[in-house]
Image 1 (cartoon, rainbow, N blue to C red):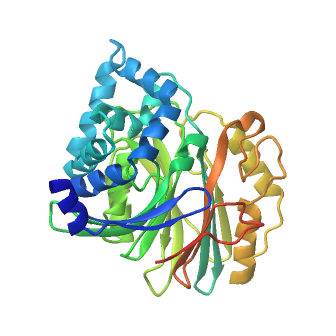
Image 2 (cartoon, one colour; image 1 turned 180 degrees about the vertical axis):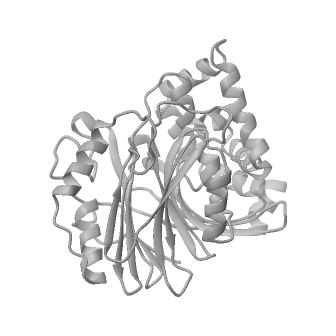
Length: 375
């Protein structure tokens, strides 16, 4: 049978199941084959994820068929195909493998935009700290935050043969039924990145949905091509991309803030530390106020930072990203208080000297790594 042949031919390998239920899966093939294999392998988790989000997804389903919203929603879906046919094929594969309607998978992958179109609430997720110690020593850390159903996420180690003959190779923390790249990921071409949600007051349904935009970045050949893609692509909504460049003799970190039709690049120079949450710091665009981001930034500004060498810098990353001093809106989020049901799913610390990404599935202040990714 064709499905078993594809799975055999492309050697799906179940590697590990971590304490928070984050498995690691090796998969190879065309975009459609990879999507289908992922959907097939994680079918139970994906269907449980959809069931957990039934109320939200049903709201979006009704919304996209309403007279006032259907044109905007259909435009967002069409923009994925016109942006990159391979991305649409990957989504079709996920839908077939997971036995979901394609419309459901499209809704999941345009949720940041549909939240605006359908007057729903989006989750302000993720915190990043980028540190340039100097003398070529650069480290970075990222908290991946989201609602509890996203605890069914997984890591993909993928080799994807695109329709143009170019092979992508990356490892990415991936939400159920969602394109890789929207959380954090690392390529074999010397760079990786993480994403933070941002909330401009206005979106542009003529632009590229955020998850498809981020997926495209995983296919780039270099940091310079990431910069070019960001600068020339019109985003439908807002997000930040924190870039880790570990493939050159002089590693560096930088951060792009992106809003519809505009972006801004921030370099992190020697001796600097840059903390980013879910509000624009560089771009001057009208944005929705987020209490969690305000609290997380205020708490960061209170903290004493030490990073005169790499060991201090990594200890600072673990301390900051694991901080719970603000009981209402902690940096390391626990699903309590006003932040109800929003949790830190995982923390990753990127050491660009050793070329390793160190993953924690518990608070990084007090736990050992659950996974180490060689970059």
